[in-house]
Amino acid sequence: MSSNPKEPSIDEGKLHNEKKIKGNSNILIHLSSGALAGAMAKTFIAPLDRTKINFQINKHIKYSFKNALGFIKRTYRKEGFFALYRGNTATLARIIPYSACQFASFEQYRKLLGVDEAKDPHFRRFLAGSLAGITSQGVTYPLDLARARMAITDKCGYKNIYEVFLSIYTKENGTRALYRGFVPTVLGVIPYAGTSFFTYETLKQKYYEMTGEKKPNAMYSLLFGACAGICGQTSSYPLDIVRRRMQTSGIGNCEKYETIRQTLKKVYTEEGIIRGFYKGLSMNWVKGPIAVGISFSSYDTIKHFLHSISYGS
Image (cartoon, rainbow, N blue to C red):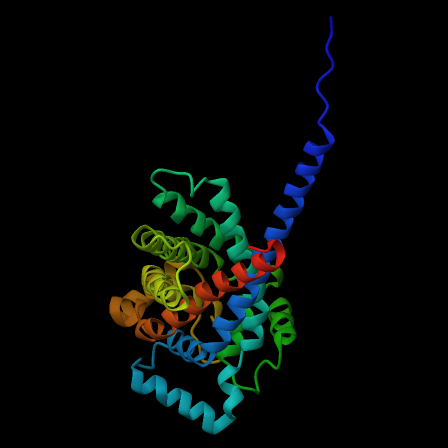
């Protein structure tokens, strides 16, 4: 006697559809929260970002806080206040999709890897962060390249992102040139994103264990994000130097760097480990904690706000 498979009831079908709609809604919330958080953080530290890049790519200029402040003052006097934000349009064009993709993909990888259910979630948390960084970097890398090019040229150089892409495509080996420096970027983003997310989420977990509160207040979120920024930036900074040298290779007065191996060797032999691979790191210890602190805390705040609007909780 054959038996027909049990058909889902109307209630089961309705429940399935509701879960699907809620899942899609959550993804939109994560994307929106990430986009806004990234834009806020990067705009806040844009002048420091431009300053750091100019020191990173020039081996002839010795980095110090005094020289960094001097660069900011000269730029302001010569080109005006908005010159300090030169390249920020390219930064925002990149960071909005980058941050949206990074936070949303982290939420998905965290769910996929079962981070919250694992007895020892530390490695899974790090892996979820690293995968999120790789995913977002792959999607938005050409915009990061454009930002670096605009940051090291004055207003007589590239006028907008379109000019950067047109110049790269027509003069530098077409589409391949849009991903110059991509490999060291990915190698750097693995420890950076992994360490950042791991540190922030671990500190939140410890806070919950100590206080019983699942959501830290704004001050603690900023503090946890700042700690995540310091750890993430320090772990990946040498590869950030390599990335910037390759991205700006041959532009203006910049030297040519063709491969990762050549760049590593050249920086090491001509500048040494500390002055070469960690040049400008102290600037990152100022801007990194600020940016990551704002980014993580803003993301959590916006996400919870959008959740409360959508689901009333």
